Structures are given as C-alpha cells and as structure tokens.
Amino acid sequence: MNLKELIPEMSRLDLELSRFEQKFGVKSAQFYQAIMAGELEEFDALDDYRLEFIEWLSWYKTWLSLAEQFV
Image 1 (cartoon, rainbow, N blue to C red):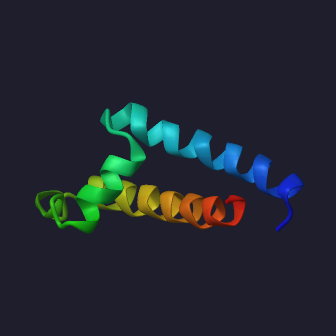
Image 2 (tube, one colour):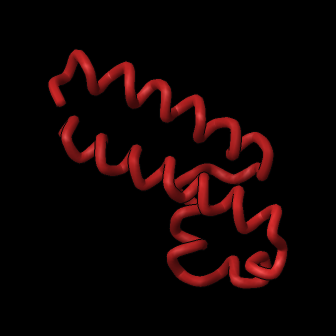
Image 3 (tube, rainbow, N blue to C red):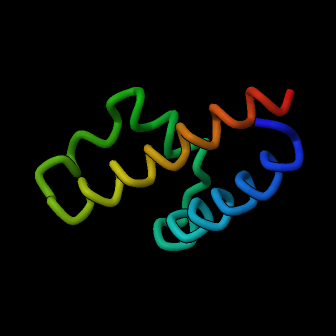
C-alpha cells in the first residue's frame, strides 16, 4: 500500500477507533494493553462487551499493521 492509500485508510480507522474510545472512555492503546494482559477477562461473560471488544481489537490490530507500513 502506498502512502496515498495509507493515509485515508488510517484516517478511516481512527474514526472507528474513536467511536469505541468515546463509548468506553479509554484510548485504544490502553485497551489493547489491558486486553492482551488478560485484564478484561471479567467482561468475557458479557456477550455485548465481548463482541464489541473483539471488533475494537480487530480495528486496532489493523491500525497497528498499517502504522508499521507508515514508519
């Protein structure tokens, strides 16, 4: 992916991530650290959170992947 394609895609991902950040009051990087450390296991029993967290995690991993290309 070239820079001309990368910047709009990352902007779109930023919008998706900000939706979760506003809803849960946590930045995506902090969420990612917490979920990877197993600190959010208590929410696994709650289907609503589980699905949203999986979606958020997916968006953030995609963002990280694209950010690596940007550097």
